Amino acid sequence: MSFPGEPGASERRRPADIWSPGWDDPFVPTAESDDEYAALIEALRAVQEAVTRSRPTPAAAAAAASGLREIATAMRAFEVDEDSQIAGKRWDLAGHGQALAPPVRLDEITATSARGVVTVGRFHSGRYAMNGGVMPLIFDEILARLANRDRPWARTAYLNVAFRAPAPLHTELVLNAYLVRQEGRKRFLRGTLHHGESLVAEAEGLWVELKPEQTRNISNELEGVVR
Image (cartoon, rainbow, N blue to C red; front, top):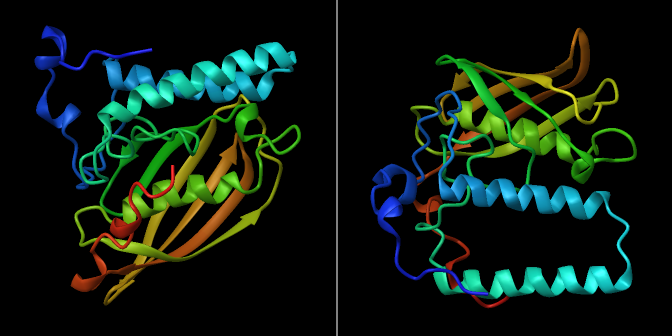
């Protein structure tokens, strides 16, 4: 399998902020997009869900594995460093262009709060409901982005999640985030996840603003060693 090495006419007309994303998160409501990269991430999520839901024969599993390895090999021709990659930095998309955590759609944002929705399928299931390990990913997604909105870069210092009720699959859940207070370099946040009127989970966490020497790429020397 091979992919075009040169962008076509439609790709060359793409806005620079789509195909050359940066680390600066504008933290605005999620937009609808039908561009090629958005379609690629959606297809990747579809594969994750389909594999999870399947019971293939050995032959079908081997054929699918071969096809996925072929795609991985072809995509390596476009490999770039972390600062230049698109994944995780398409801030306009739900999930900002990555397929690890369920995509959170942001609907309402202020300087101190954010509101959105998230839906999980069986790829993120923990036996008939959302896997407990997925919940911190969802909270860290929205709380960290709110913590860093129009502020110097901060990292998660701790994130405590309390589980109140099973989170159903294939159901839209409402996610809220709040900036509680800031003390020097420390930013305290809390969040809630609801299914209708039922509180599914709540979280509280601390984000600490980085010192200049802490903003470097600490993984740079290991890039490309293992993949």
